[in-house]
Length: 209
Image (cartoon, rainbow, N blue to C red; front, side):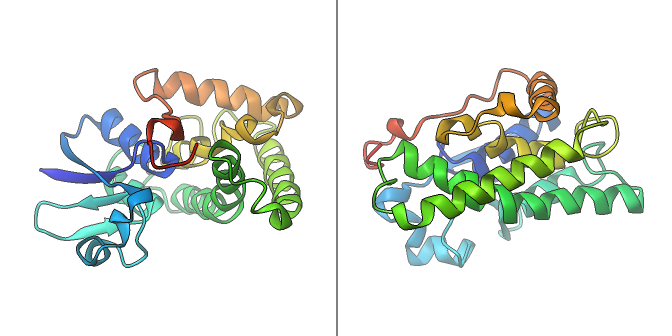
């Protein structure tokens, strides 16, 4: 059976939980205590040298890190990762966009905001906010005449971008300013369903949130 090394408040881990659920894949969960340093132990660093969750442990003992790499591995051969060469490349385009323009910007601002770290990172906040606004504007343009990011059905591109994108309000962005993006958020939320809650950092007593 697959093993998901998880941390509930992580939206990167959320992505993987969603896809595993949508595909009906059984898996075991191993919670990793991020703020107590468990992701930087020698044992965990063998699974992921970068020391971050999520990690997917395979049946043969191998492991895959980086949430979007895990998504593409799991989605292979399913409708969530198109087989068509162009469509697959477009999915990859949005996965790369998410990890460069969304997760390190909106994800960071959200983390700082919800765990009381905004002030100590104040020197970076203005730049992050500008970059976040640019990312949301790019998504708005990309979704002007589209139901989903690639094609007319949910793919791992939508799951990945939605993970932190739909929580932009947690760190001060107004999604209502982006009507096409807001409509997409509603569509993706409906397609994903209600069985995948977003967990606050406050559930972790070590988070400081």
